[in-house]
Length: 254
Image 1 (cartoon, rainbow, N blue to C red):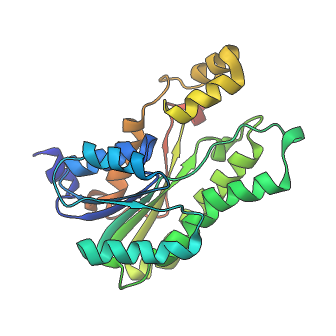
Image 2: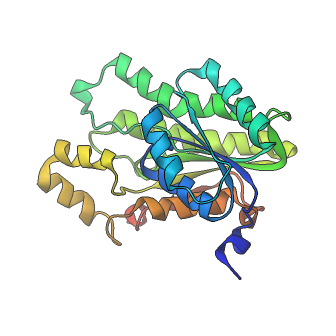
Image 3: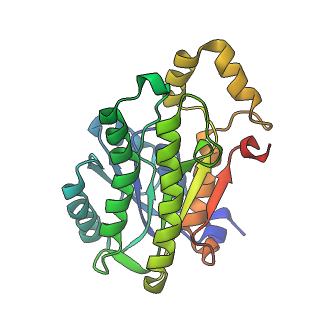
């Protein structure tokens, strides 16, 4: 049996936020290989176009969107519905990481990070649950983090947003089960992305080595997380909802 046959994503309609780079881009590329039609959402039009050029197959859509523009989210999903038909799944990969010691935390920056990492997911879920948007059986996947489960020094605000996402996913799963909408989240460890290159510069080489050593299987890749996202989006996980799938190379096993 082929991989696409196992996942059953051929001809499905998937929306991926944060598709300009990193985990979002990797998931979109893999979804295209599985035969899905993919709507790419992100803030950077040129980067979205680059992602679209990497996808196999035809019928994909690059749709510039800043997910903190909450009022624009319903219209974006309506456009996807008009282009492709009912949406089978949404992977909300958009978000930001922040290394901020407590002494440097400001209320403004904390509110901005919660808005981007948490509120955007809530409003995306609200728009997606509309019967005029989603397919009869559908799935939503949110991005949490390993530090949202165990905490970490210097990332208190970021960890709090990711813990909120894990809780949000569980609550939405219970509320939307009657609508045949499954909701799960992924608690990812540190993976190599352009974003983590910036973290490496912030923490220095000694700090970076400590982060690497904290992952028993070593640092992950965006493909490791993308594989988990596609499983949760697919019919292969039809009896999975309200879970936090940990993909962290053993980081939280200690």
